[in-house]
Image 1: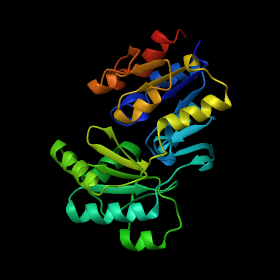
Image 2 (image 1 turned 90 degrees about the horizontal axis):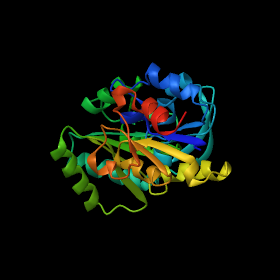
Image 3 (image 1 turned 180 degrees about the horizontal axis):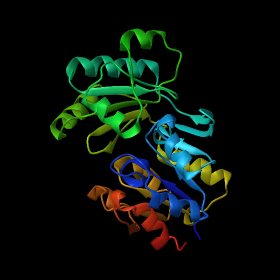
Image 4 (image 1 turned 180 degrees about the vertical axis):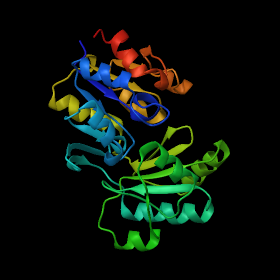
Length: 268
């Protein structure tokens, strides 16, 4: 019997407009199984879905970099793994010199920052409804006391993404995790920030066996989560290399694939 469900958000639980459908809401609310969002998103980008699903339990943001419970419009942090400020300075300064056209922004626990509003930030705003704060990176990073959990790049095409990956590799970064979270998204977090970290925390406090957990996902950054459970349900819209980790394949994210998977594979 499945006693806990974990789910990625973008490309999985959310449709192409970045919202959770009524079909998914109904099935999740009625299935009677605790449900945890496990996302690359920041907490503030998860609140709308948390509210629609009526979730009151622990949630996982920044690919496992922040485990938290919502407390009104703020959060209670349970566990956090953030980037070293020197690493953030190195990445933002070097990549902006080499690739001035790439969309680059970063997140603290409560805010989203960028040095310019561009195609990438506008795309992200259309999906999340949030607006980035525009700052001068060098000045802000020299003054801030806030922890930075994620740097996000959005490429315009595959060639730009491959060039970005090569340039990041050339920096020989340490203590970071670099993962694709969508077709043209590349995100940098602490190397301790993995979706498996959040799963393990919830598994331990609830004394869950691997056989008692199920997870839904579609992207490369979901693989650590999928490996933590015996029931790994992959979206039909997932990348082919991710589908290799599936115990079950469900419908796409625009066809209420999470709801379909719960009903068909979890016997509820």
